[in-house]
Image (cartoon, rainbow, N blue to C red; front, side, top):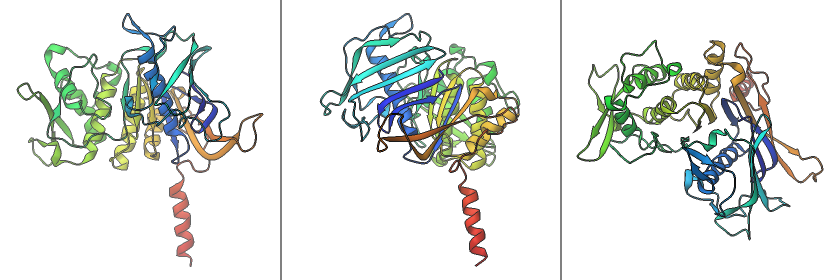
Amino acid sequence: MTALNITNFKCFHQKDIGLNQLTILAGANGNGKSTVLQCLLFLRRTIEHCAKWENGKYNFKELNGLNVELNGPYFLNLGNSAYVLPVDFSDTEVSLGIKNLGNELRVTYSTNQGTELWLTPIPPLLNTYENNPLFYQEFYYLNAERIGPRITQSIKFYDYANVGHKGEYTAQVIADLNLDKYKFQVDERRVNKQLLKGVRFEHHINAWLEFILDGVSIVPFFDEKTHSARVEVQNSYLKGNSIVATNTGFGISYALPIIVSALIAKEDRVLIIENPEAHLHPSAQSKMGYFLGVIANSGLRIIIETHSDHIVNGVQLAVAKKALTNSHVTVNFFSKERETLPGESSDKKQPVVKEISITEKGELTEWPAGFFDQSQVDFAELFKLRKL
């Protein structure tokens, strides 16, 4: 996947958003980052709902006549069909597409009367992108509002191992894959060899957990009688004992689903993470960015939305340390600036999205105004105040 094309959806009239092995969406609130994720999630839902299931993946050659709901799946809450149109729209059709080196998947939708809770895909479907990662059954998405610490978590049947969209099945997946009968093997490129202390799945998790949150580890438990699973937490203060997750902060419960998803996801699949920095100390945020860089370099396609310069710093360090190929990273900065489309009136504007790359030395190729520069702005203001 090299680009997401958005036509006539919310704040965008016509826009290509660059995609890569690791795609970072950054920028101030209200400038289109969430819209990009919503487009990706809605397109994925369209594939699930309107494609034919065949030989272990979605065969999306023609439309089946079904509408696609705007609310519910992937925690989308898009309202009615009129709400997805730009405020100053002139065309009532929406189009979403994925491009890759001359190949393309594109779906056009009718908004009908504007009051429906769905969009209607319109034939013909354009699809020359046969190996689209969105066609695989395995698709991983973590919402910004992940669940906090719980004593236990419920269990469920799953077609493929995943932690749920809020991390609600993290304990079950860890316990399941930790059993010898599953014979689960972590991709060699995702192994933290420096901190690994065993061969079970929990050891792989703990190696990265300890890297991100110094001294922290977990122990998984599965209770067949109560149909529940849980993780208990250990740290340097407990001297080998463990405590229930509710006796710890939110950082562990928010980071753990990311680590598990990144270790279990199959190569060439998509993992979308909203705010991977949530509830983490700045040093842990940087290490989370480094970790995601290592995982992206193993072949998993990762898309993150972040407000953290520390996450970006960690990615830069991964590049500088040769743990991540610099050409595999694209940073999309959603600016407060607005642009007018060619041939359109000056009143019809959309957010400017600046595509930033990283050099082999881990340096950003551009640092536009508003891109993680608040510390400098605040320090300059403090300097002025001290002189008064």
